[in-house]
Image (cartoon, rainbow, N blue to C red):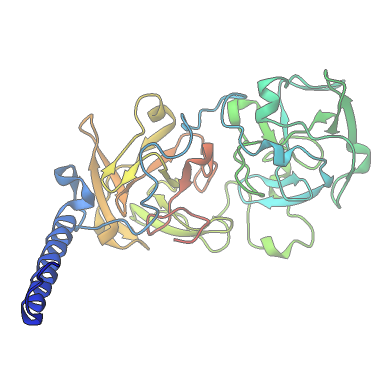
Length: 356
């Protein structure tokens, strides 16, 4: 039998083990705090912050690619099966950027394709295109107030199925819209547009009209007017400002009013950008800001990443942030949900539209 010594000796050994563990833990905590955003001298002006947002998502998170290229068709069609059924009762939603937009009964935005034809109706979206842009079946559909029943029709596709038309234009959903109400497909490739109530392109002459009786959207205006209710335009000398978006909640815009985004394939701990090469043609690194010229964002969460090319990039809670070339005007959020990897960033560095 092993001799463990007297009870007093065993007690001293236990105390020594506890002290050793405590010292090791303190040393680790000190090391973490002294590494700015966990990346040594590549992070500057960070006030020794560690991310409080979604730090688990880092390099390699999500699917390959994920750069949000404005191509019709191609990869990233996850979730299209859930949006392949009948539209049922069409509805109208007010978009602060586009005005009245047609959606299905679940709130998914419906689209038209410039390479199709309305007179006579014909669809030119087949193969891989139809995976990214699922055609809406013609059955089980009825119009809401504001949509004329005589504007609804159908067209026979190459595979023999019948597709819904509005104003003669074949109707589609967009597989990369992340949630009902998203309009991220509008403007893709310069040929895809959200549908207006008459089958035209949303955001044209009808954009300033409001859906009758839709009190929930009171105060929203068409492009060229003020920001949506609850938000404020960037300006007044602010280089960075947190605003309240009516759909996504709290998010951050730069001095030009552009929405800023974070990328799941980046890393906050250590702070690192995985958007390089072709990615940078679509997603532009946000420039560092003066901490004395920010509104609604805690200065301690602001830091700067030195990129491989020597330029500096703004980071919020250690997450590098970008603006999206697909956003066409201040306040747009069309980059949110791209490839399931890009998200409007909150004032705390988290993903807009969700807790944290």
